[in-house]
Length: 420
Image (tube, rainbow, N blue to C red; front, top):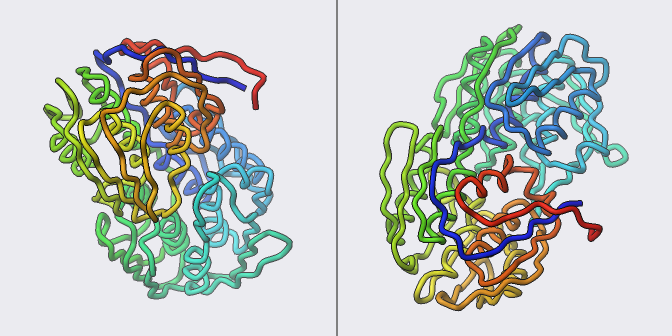
């Protein structure tokens, strides 16, 4: 088990390259089940979640090999249609194999998912969408079993705009017989990237990038090579870190269009931002301006940065409010931030932050991926030394975060520990 030991007070300065998107990669990998063959997925981040998905694919009979940031996938020898609990419990995105297996092989047996320890994120929409396409769904000993001789096109409306459900149903619909129309579909960049890969494989999809997807099913798809889009959450995290530390950084290999709402809020908070192609430069002088945010589905402020924004507002003068409309209980970082001296009140799905208080180093514990990031950001500005435990959560979604922060001037060390 590892922990981070962080000495606060350093300004972040320099350049950092943004990795491929975790959530983007986790959608592309299961899509390879739709067409037996070999794939090369470039800009794949070297993360715990990617390794978990690769092991899950291996349990199905696929071969996955990650060399640097290039993932080679061979799905020519699928021998099993069961995604076992030992893999799925570690990561909710494992549920993505349900749609492709059902569409390609007519059978999928997938354990009910695990993953982050916060918030009910039911899979009902995944199952209702597949049922609408003609799959027979049953729950057997903790496993979702999906059967279909041949899926058939249908109209389906997502009651909630769900990234996971949209991806799963979309992957199933591309091999269904006839036309499918999916309304209130998620329009997050990761779904758009998945749809574009499917089209490259031979799928017929209209409305990509909109909430209405029209899919004309095809009989077969072909393997392709594909590049994973940049990780917009990692990019936002680094921009916030620079703002907190009164630093100046340039992030590279990023898509600024995926960060429009975040950039607007950072500018409102007093940051000086320049966008040039696939690079974003941020400079911060003085304390941030207290700025409220409300998380929303894309293109709004993503829920995946609310914990980091909460940390930023600790350094602002005055009070601010963070409202999470996506998940009502995603505030497990708040008690740990309090150990550093933060003054935050939780009211329903909102955090009321008293800015301007001095933060002091302490030992804190991560509860989930984005909570980990918020604790590290707060530690960067806290006086003294902070130890952040359970950083395996962080390793699920940030590629070499400590090394990238060190390159920007942060005083952070990864240390082995016996504390679980």
